[in-house]
Length: 465
Image (tube, rainbow, N blue to C red; front, side, top):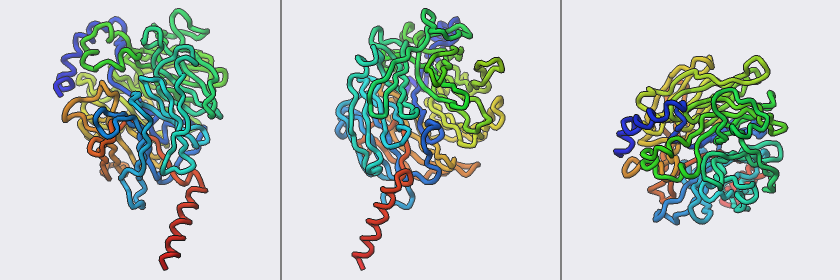
């Protein structure tokens, strides 16, 4: 696609325009996920699948004229012992196209919440009654009015008995100023927490140049009573055609340059940190002695470390680059290993994933690079660090066009040195839509289901004798 082939040249005038405001235009990303997209990016408050997952739930964007055209939750069988390994087990359509984006489990892992960036609807699926066949049990369709004008629920994150959402926009100007929104696990609204801005810091310390009020991802470090959010752009940008946005000088000014440190218990913002270039996904270390998190910046293709400053606060510093920043590889989603030794960073425009050794968090070292497809967005890692799943869609209006618009779920095995492809599920061929974010399911999480499946198999064996 010419737009992406000539991406760097098209962007040069914009970068020049934005230089005085520290590259406040992060363009191509998503989210994900993350997130939030795998076992290692999810809330520390929930149980993890430490062994083999049975299913991958793919939150999928509907495409007009393809299948039923609706957004849907696609359940893919991924246990090698299953007869339908690598195939679709179940599909739950939700009605219409909502710009399906991110999803997340409640802390008890019984329900999966999934959001739509365009309609601001939230869909809640029961995944514990029958993990192979998630059931849509509730739709929250008053998100905007209930929250006081928040638009674009992006990332749901599990806290004890609560689901807290980041969001991307507001209903006043559809720009990037936004908030966090908290619900009970039952779907009852609790509160809205607006992200600090220059004209309303809400008691937070502005440590650099910016306090833009933008949102994107969320992670927590309970042992430090710290919650951390990142920033992206508003509805008017993420729903715009990507090529059109590149040519719109005003639109290109509307991207986030900040991360916010919050008091986890009180939900009060404490610090606004400068991280120029649209910091997207956040991945925090798991070791109790590792009190730090990483993010990557979309526009400047950098890896940033967020750590304690030794003075009771936090600081952010650039510790590496992703590929050659001059080629604008555009980092989107990334994943951290459960042992804090690796991060996997996806880059949309060149279709690659890159593995960095982060044993020394101040000096990430590129140790593996793999071409995944003509475009790649989300990456999901298993807790044992042996399996890496990839999907391809970013945003409906930002995905590549024509033949470059690949849409798939692809699994690789990682042995510490090499990646080996296991299967590819073509979402276009299967008439499913645009494959976006992934979550894992397993019978091991729900003993009753595992026993039920085993009992059925045993009964069939007995009856066939």
